[in-house]
Image 1: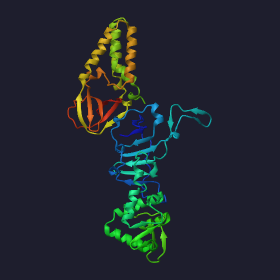
Image 2: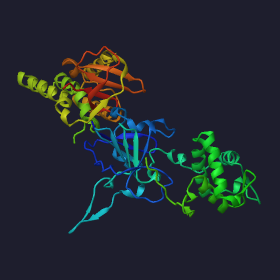
Image 3: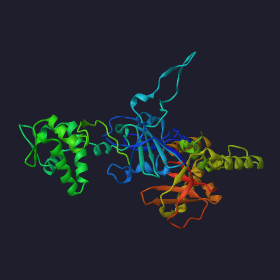
Image 4: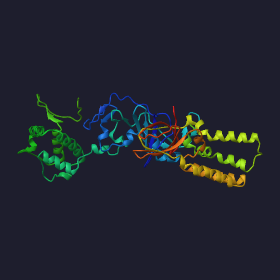
Length: 264
Length: 169
């Protein structure tokens, strides 16, 4: 059975609309979301295993429509999100901003009319889609997932504690007045990704990686340590750790990759 | 779409139609004859069963979380029905009854109350109070003799935000 829920400021309500309002778009060309992929070359990104994450919200798999009171017209202006539950387990979500709820005059070809009641614009394509059977969340931009407020934390920049953890693991010394507090957002985001990568590697690969970085960036390495004194150097070092700044094996060309894509 | 849940007045009138019917007979506002009695009975029955007639327009609901407890609460309605009768019999004039009835309808329309329609009991419905593991507490009207816990109910129609009627296919 399909049904439509709306999120108001603090509660959810059910709309009396019977039909679904979104058609499922073509999701065949979707790609797994990777923050390193700077070039948007597909319409839809996806993330899997949403159920195990901290930011998961059970409303994504809601089936009990009768839990929710009816939406009445006085609630209309408080709508923040509309959730279109389909029979096949797909949930299509659109975020609503105050600007798309309107009560205005419309100009038709030969007259102006005033639409009764409140109206809101439904887009052709939803902002976020959740597939219950695969536990997969589809979206075009990470920032449009307002139904799961904590999700951007997953891709956030590193906190000071995490920065310290990273520089200890990799034997980095910060010099010349450059310290943990001076590391800025761009590097922190990159640092977060690199730290995740390092923590997922076995110890021997971590040592290999550190040796590789030392070999690729001899100007920063000194006696088994790395010495960094500004943002630019930190950025370069992090890019090498992420294996995105590298020297090609045969022609020994120095390269930097702005956008990478992992092939399974 | 005539959603019963969006027009609480239909529920309010259909569950209390016994009151005006009794008031008309009791205060003798209409001349008593076989014809008038028959027409009162027929109109009362039509209005009382109106929610069933309007069913196909009511909003579909489902409950997929298994039910952890079911309690038959028919006994909660006896005082209410008696209240309908006693109130109606104690009002001397039809005009006074109209005012009282109007106030009762206003209260019933604006509050989320259980749906006290005695006529549904006559045709075999029972009231159940249902509780699920995730904290849902609703009233369900059903013709089935439900005793077993841990079942799911898939075909329901919303009468108001806390009362639902089970539709058997």
